[in-house]
Amino acid sequence: MAQKLRDRGFNAFVIAGGLREWSKAGYPLEQVPEADIVLLPVFT
Amino acid sequence: MHPLANLARHGYLALALVVFLESIGLPVPAALALIAAGTAAVSHAIAARYALPLALGATLAGDLLLYLAGRLSGWWLLGVLCRVSLNPESCILKSAQRFHRRGKLTLVVAKFIPGINTMAPPMAGSMRMPFLRFLQYDLAGAAAYVGAYFAVGYAFAGVIDVVYRKTMGLTRAVEWLAVAALAAYILYRFLLYWKHRRADVAPRITVHALADLQRNEPQKILIGDVRSHGYYDRGAQRIAGSVRLEPSKLLVGEEQLPRDRELYLYCT
Image (cartoon, rainbow over all chains, first blue to last red; front, side, top):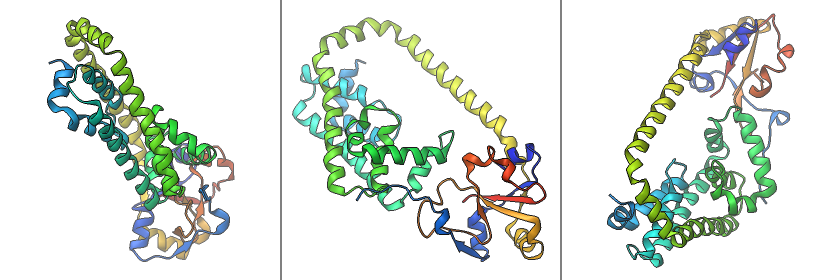
């Protein structure tokens, strides 16, 4: 994804280790806001 | 050796194993095994009264395993299954919506549809279909699947045997064809990997360097979460200050992305 954006002229990078590495290093996390949650259907 | 002789020798265990492995998603020909079992039952190499319940039980066992995995993992398992799709996010969303609309019927016919047969049980689990309802419809589907192919083998035993004997001479050619097809497929996958490995050249940043940037020059950067399934559960977390960038729309809506800032992307 980052490489495709770079091909289109964006200055894109990849965060090594991603969310897991960020969390392990103790850097701040936040809850995903309700508005961004995509709830998938469930049977009741 | 004639496949019926193989089946008679390795019998019920082989049938149960093949059917179970297919039900958990492995690419093994359970339908062929069931047809062979039906044919073997005609010549009494195996007994239908044992083979049918065994095959049914093995199918249900595999489906239950996937149902529980879906139930326990939420959407994670579906994300894994959809990873091989061209558009994983769309795969998850569309599969879920379609299944929710036709869930019960899907479970009954899923076994006959390649791809859907593996997705249906974990989706039922992820979408919290009540266990008894799942069992009811999955049992109906498994019984239809096992019964149908077994019946084909039973009904056409004579024809299958004749076809097998006539094609015995082609066995060597078929084997070479299969090897050639497998080699071509492996070569194709390797070329695909080689072509896409250039994606590894996208520069990376460590989390420590990014944290420094975020602290000292926040206006120069944008941190984007491109996870395809991480947003489907309440309580999901993300890097503080990051924004959701939907992978399927990332390249289509690129004019929304800032060109005067550095974009730092992450998934898991």
